[in-house]
Structures are given as structure tokens and as C-alpha cells.
Image 1: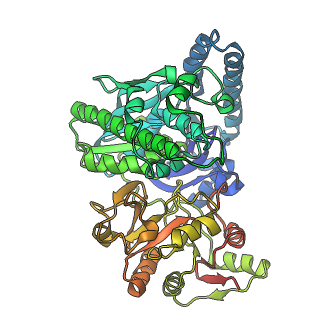
Image 2: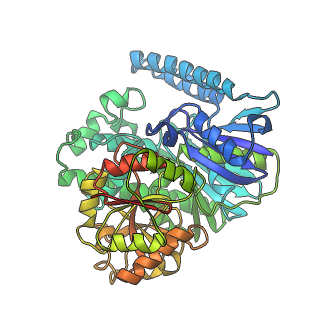
Image 3: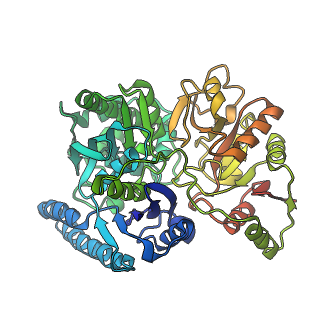
Length: 563
């Protein structure tokens, strides 16, 4: 049985292929179009999935999509109609937009009916988030918690997964949304909403939670786990926040004037970010405590855009009542592609589970012949290496910044050693070098380590396994001076553990680096520059390499060096 799953449409569209219950391919559309956060029907991503699965459209049985347009209209039209008296022009425009958006979605989806027996199912957003985590987790039974900006109308969902079934327990609906709260403050701090929340998370480490009480009073959690925001601090629920801002005059009176984009970041901004982050963590931990009391299970699955907040995830792992926590690597809307496919296979068709998502290497790969042809076409001088891992480790140890392109591309927003930029974590100045000359981004942004799985606990407190780089751990105090380039200002790091079984070449590279420098980890960041998607093809890698300050590029067995 072949099932295509589709995630995203407004943004971050993606596709996956499920064959007889096993995930064989998954990729975001942006990697092919080279437009970050690409939306729409992911036709290029679907084409790749079919090719990887060795099938055609005639072989597809089901297609599951990331949102139910009829449910969305039924929920949003009455809400926006009620807002007409507060903001007539915007509310009317939004009503028209909703009709147009969902009509376009339905119309464009017709292009997917390539054979008469394909069944296209429009599935609800948050249950698909839940399915994307639970059905690929190692748990037969788990509590499920999904949290993002907004689905059809739901913003937060709690459920219980058992075998092939997910049972909803409770949900929170818009305009009450911790995802919107975080986005609103991201906008207030002068960053891009729905793109730069991770910058606020990184900035939070530089501040103190001086405004904790003010943010905490905005969020009231009921005994059943649901919460409400104090909407008097916001205007997003009835005005066009993307043009006018998301916060009210009351918010500005409390916290001061909004920061303009590219304006100098002040201590006040750092403290606001710190307060927001801590309140998010504390409130989610409180809700998870209630969820645990309701379910009494030891396992927890997390999904939704807020599920990418790795600092929050680290605290959940350390402090929540759940000893086992699983976060799916593409936790945002792209990952709903996985959720919708597995939901059809297990919950609707009742098929037994036979798959656990242990790695995210589900995208395109390229043969040595294809790569060499591209290098010849570009008239680039290159060298074919006898020992790729040893040579690359030596370059990194010499202080070179290396583009690392190997095997199948990762699914999700994190580079996990297939499309990565690597550097020496032991150099004090390396964070600034990579930020300034390669990534072209803010100097406060931290970098992540990739560490050999067996030795992770020696360097990161409590870390045993973190293959998707979605948990932040404290760096052991005795090791912080050894690896300053990956140690954030608060003494933590967002860790990826590398397994010999799932990433053998990357594992060997880190082993070789350890022989030279004595530490079993490297600095790892995504192979892209600010504003562009992670590279997909060898040509993408070459273009990125020559537009940045990288020193060397390793594509499978081939080495290209500048100068």
C-alpha cells in the first residue's frame, strides 16, 4: 500500500511516501524551489517521493493532507464575523481571504487525483501533528502534546496514543495560543514572526527574567489543562498584526516601545526574551503535569511548531513527570506530511505498527557520477579522497570551516550531518568566525555540537540520546573550556548525538577528529546562509560554498578547496 502525506500549504509544504507502513521518503518543497518556507501543493517533493519509492501515480492508494478546509471555514468564519464590529475592514478582508484561500487549496488539490482510485482525505491539523509524533515513536502508549500558532482553530492539543489509535483529551482554540504569544513578542522585539522565534530563544540566554511576573499574569491555566491569554495585551485577534504589530498599547506601556528591525539590542530586550522563554517553559510544564495526572503513562510525544523550542524540550525532559520524551524532527507543519500518512495507515485503516523513526535521512542523495559531472560542468578543481573522514577531520582541526554534503538529505529544519557546515568546537573564536563569514547572522546566535552517542553523557549533563538536535542540555562544567564554540552563554548546548548505525560516515569523521583534538564532537550548523533553505543538490552546495567564507567543501568523496 502506498500513501502520500502532505504537510503545509500556507507555508513549509512537504511530502512523504509511506509504503506498507514504512517511511521511505520525506522532503520539503523549499529544497527544490530554493524559496524558504515555500507553500502550496508540494508537487516537486511528491515527484521525488514517487521516484525514491520506485512507483508512479498509478500506484498511489491514498493522499492525506495537513488541514481540513471545511472545518477551517466552519470555525474561522463565525469567529471573524464576530470581530466585524471591532475591526470592520480587516475582518471583512479576512473573511474574503479565508474563502479564497480554502477554495484555492481545494482547487489545487484536484491536481493530485492522478488516477481514479486515489482517495484524497482532508485531515484535521492538530490530530495530524499528534500522529506525526506518536505513530513514528518507539512507544506503544504515550501522552501526546501538540502546540503551535493555529490549525483550523485549535492551537494546543492533548491526547492519548494507544497502539493504532489517538484519543483527544482536550484542546485550546484561537485566539488563546502560546504559539501566537511567542510570535507576537518575536515581532515586538524586531524579528520576523513565524521565522525568527528561535532567535528569541537564543537571545533569552543573555537576559534575566525581570518581566516574569508580567508575562505569567497573561496566561491562566485551568485545572483541566486548558489555558487562556489576557487578550487586553494584544490586538492580533482582530487586527492585521503583520502590518500593525501584534501587541496593544497596554503591552507597550508595560514593556516599552517595540524594537525596530536592525536596531541595537538592549538589555531590556534580552530580559523580555528571557522572561517570555521562562514563562513558556513553566506554563507548558504545568500543563504537562495535568496531562500526566490524566493519563498516568510514562511516555510523552511532542509536536507542533513550538515543539521545536529545544530549550523548553530540555526542561521537559529533565523536569516533567514523563521520563521518556519523543519529539519528531520535523515538528512544524512540514512534519504533518508524516502524520497524515501514518494516521491513514494506522487509525483509519487499522494496520499494525512496524516502523520507528530513528533518523531523518529521508531526502535526495546523489551518485558519485552525478556529482563529478556537476563539478566538471562548473570547471572546478577537485580531488577525489581515499579517506574522506580522516582528511575532513584534519581540515577542521586546522581551523578550516568545511561544507559537508553526504548521503540523503535530512527532513526537518535541522542539519544532522548530511547537509552541514562543520568547524572546530575547541576554538574560542570559531563561533564569531562562522556567524560573520559563513552564516552572515547575528553574533548572539549559538551553534550546536554533534557528539558521538556513546560519549554524549561525558560532555552534556543527562544526555544519552538526542539524534534530532531538539533538546538543550547543560554542558558539563569541567568541559566548557574545552568546547567554547558550542557552549552558549548560559552554559548549555543544543545537542545532536551521532550513531554509528544511522550515520556511519559522520560518526567516523567525529572519531577521526577526536584522535587529533581529543574531543568527540564537532561544531555543526546547517549548510545554508540566512534567508535561504538548506542546500539539496551538489549545485546548491557549490553556490553556497562560493558565496560564503567556507574554506573547503566535501561532497561525498570529492574535496574542493579555495585558493
